[in-house]
Length: 281
Image 1 (cartoon, rainbow, N blue to C red):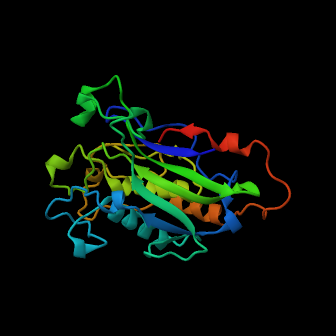
Image 2: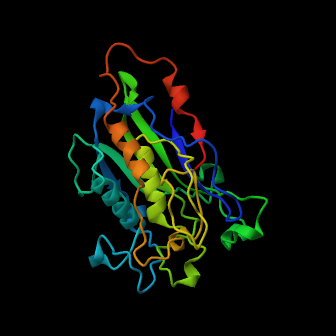
């Protein structure tokens, strides 16, 4: 059974979740051998998907030689931020990963024009295509990406052997600058990749406070369940802080330091059903 964690869009008129500050990580599953090294395997759909990056954007390209800021580049940048936090997790960006690392495929969503039932993301409506949150209040959420477990240890299904991160190729993606007005309604792929990589580190959603309003600083957790178009414009400093928060890093360090007991004869009955639950981001 698959466990899917999604990142959805919340319209600009809606407030972030309030209440008691909760976050943390799940210990219902772990990686085979309690591995803390994950290899990001970038599929052609991600390396070939260009993200709008206007001339003068302050965000550097992790692979400048190809002259394309791709979805793979956005995920690389997010992985570099998680690695810099030194939480105990490691995200390997090498082309050929260590065979002992757990593979995490990174790709764009599948769209099958001949069989829409196979579509992983729904095509946008006319309002959504315009990326105008105020124009479509009846349908205020759009899924942007998800993390999904693909394979498990045959002897103990608590332990994952392969997973993936999938991005919505219908969304308008852009790494904008604070001066790029036309980037207001684009979704920041680095922010989204940071969140989905957080799920790969076993992190849960956070409802800690923080602003998501354009014109105010981005001071919330990267693991909050919603993001907005134009979030890269919420911080008016030139070098926008696309990094996990202090609390995100604390949760990731706790997750890394809390492995499951080694696989043995006992297998958790019904764990597959538990891990099949779906949660919107």
